[in-house]
Length: 212
Image (cartoon, rainbow, N blue to C red):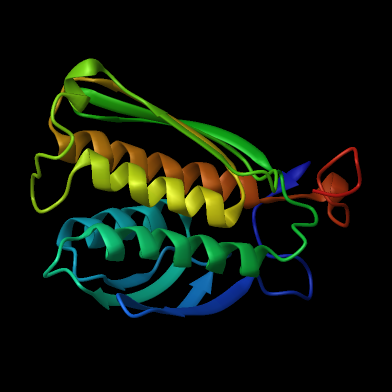
C-alpha cells in the first residue's frame, strides 16, 4: 500500500499541553495522534464536551482535556482558549510533520444536514466557514448551551494555532446540533487522513519547497 495510517517508526506522535491565564485554565495531559479514539473530556461546556468526544473518536485520537474558566461571564473566553490549546497540542505532537499526507477532505451527513471539511496542514493559517442562510439568522441564539457563533470561534482559534488551512461547508436542513455534529465528525476524519503517514515520502516534509 502506498499510504498507511499510524505512527512514524521509532517516534510517538504524542503531546501534553497546558495553558493558564487569568480567565481560563486548560490542561491536555494526553494527546496521541496515533490512538484509538479514547477520550476523557471535561470543558465545563457540555455541548463542546460532546463535540470533542466525537472529534476524537472519529479521528482515532486519544485525548484527555480538562478546562475551566470564567463561564459566569460567558463561554467565549473558555471556548476560544480551548481551541487555541488544542491547536498548540496537535502542532507539538506533529513536530516537523515529516511523512504526513498533509491534505484531506471529508463530507459527513447527519440526518438532513451535512458538513464538508477540507484541510491542508500547510503551516499557513486560514479559516473559512460557509453555510446556508438559515443557519446564520441568529448566530447568538444558543441551543443546548452553545451556538454556531461559538463553534466558529473555536474552529478559527484551532486552525490558527495549528497553522492549517481549514475550510468548512455546512449544508442542508436541521438544527444546530445536527449541523455541528457533522462538522466535528468530519473534522476528526479529515485530520486523521491528513496526519496519516505516506510511506512513499515517510522521511520528507510534505512540500516541494522542502519546508512547510
